[in-house]
Length: 231
Image (cartoon, rainbow, N blue to C red; front, side, top):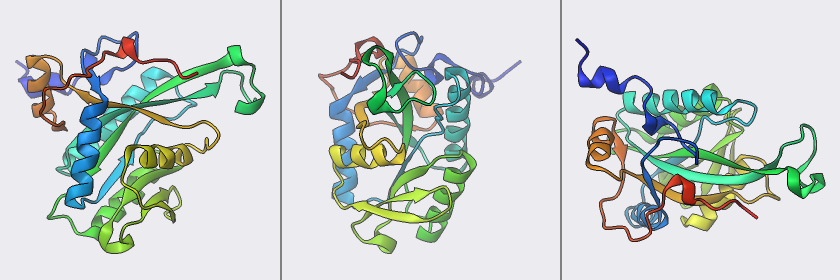
């Protein structure tokens, strides 16, 4: 007979996202602001990355993100689940600025924010960031490592290079960095918020699966169906 953890290792609705999903998590911008403020106050090193790739369908991207989350779990690093989106042209090979308005589609993705554990050396943390950026074939991840880069937030590219993109640990600044991450400077990446469990069962699963989220009585909770399409 399977144990509870074995069932959790199978695909769950919590792995899904989007308006057509069965994911019952709620999304809070205030909760994400709280996490960013915590990082700012405590001078935490962090990385923001996704396994999402535009050339894959939703099912494959869910699988890739689940594998990335499992990798963080094996490193004893919990993750915050971030929800964001931008617009892209549904016509292959047509650039955003040349795309007919009715062919622009809202692309939603889940990203992960992980904080460096105190017992992990900064060079080890950077090595892991370079590894996951390359293995999950990302143009770049967004990171800050104070001991190496002081207050700079940097892109860590797939080739292992780092590029300074600012010093402000704020939602808008990190979103701007993420716009550069997806190479869509003319299409700003927007963070909708942080995913938090909306039910008692969801909270139990989040704890078991090593999800991080701030505890609070959030007044701005939204479901996936409430996310507004970018205009």
